[in-house]
Image (cartoon, rainbow over all chains, first blue to last red; front, side):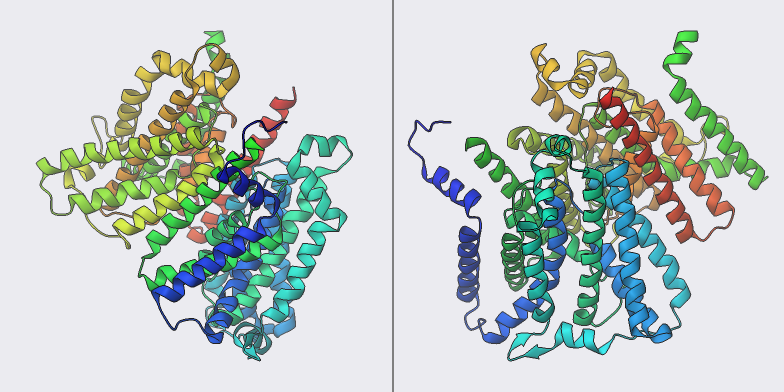
Length: 324
Length: 316
């Protein structure tokens, strides 16, 4: 395709965003932080930075589920529920059967939910959105039934989860000890491993991937199981951070996790994006949320804003990719 | 006659299934009668209206994930405005809410047409937006609704086995859908669902028809939201499980996901089937949470089955 007209500013910015999504994103993040500093002078400090990181990490981990599933053109709306279930199971089973078995059961149930998702999406070809919403509904029902039997046992949050969730070392949150290896692993997996290539291939053109011999259903099954497992681990971390086991612990993170991946430049239609952008997206959302809280915008306003951001960013990316 | 039966075999099968389920109910609970039917119909009403709205959009080849959130907006708007209003004041409020529903749906449709973002993404984003709007209007269940609206769907009408809620549903749906189905617009809705390109080449204004389909869905969502309030008497800002339920009922009702085929009677029967199953579980004194799990599993199974059928249909 030849470009006859001179590229406009929007055009050039668009190509920059598509080719190197990280640069404008980091710019936006710095802009937001500067705005926050102007709105509320003296808020910026080492403590603030470490706190923001601490809040952003569970969000960024759940957004990893969305990034990976979105690469194939899917989505996983059950992550909030899975994280909640894993946290709740760990906290309530730990006093009964000890910490390691409790965590094993929690992660096992996350894997089961992921397998059910994968079965519906890979084999029955249900749209991922509907399927994950459905399993979330069923899983919430199971959690409510479970909750009625364990009400008397009490709650125990394992010490190392508390250390991981709330502790600090040299002013930095300990959760980085989990997150940095995790992020490196995810970025390595999507860029260098065969599995990562398959995700991009399926997202870019599923029919072509199938014709070149990819067993699409196996990839989907693995992907949704992996996504659920990540959500389960996030639930453990979040339990240590929030320090209570509630039935709606991680549910408020569902929407922001989608928003973080979309802002980070991952296309909701598949085939484009990466985890690096998502991490910056999660940081942007965390700073934005603290700014909205500072301006006393109620929960409803926040949801409207997040919804509009998802829509606007997606529409913008469609315009840009069509033009290029 | 034979051809008519063949063409409507799916719907007839659903009707037989519903009759059988009601018979089972009668066996479980021998004194099941007029009052049982009445409460069943009232519980099913918001689900049925949501399903009708969803069915129209699916027939036109789309899907609307924001339906439950739009219902919440309609429900809280009604409850806030009608709090303390007289009967005479409440009539324009009801009309206003129906217009609001049309407007919300039209916004969804217009965004899909203008931004060219797929329907599933736009309505997912709008799901959050409408949820936020509902929370801004009312952040906890509250308000109240005009008493005449409540009496509209309570009790029986004429013979005592015919609940008012069923009459209400039938009249509303027929008033809105039959004229549309018979007109050029009805044909266009099916045309864009069946093959948008072919429809465009035969001169159907595809974008405009799509916006109308979403607006109709919004209208039924508003009716559904009002009926939620009619049942409880207050406004509910947190959307109920209407999204998955309506998709499941649409699929079970014989409307193919992907568009262009099916009617409204099948999905409505499917809603009553799903609700009757739920009621039977309650009558068998199954724990309500366990009943919710069973119901969710049935809905997911139905959607899976529908997806398998749709994939088969695409291949042949």
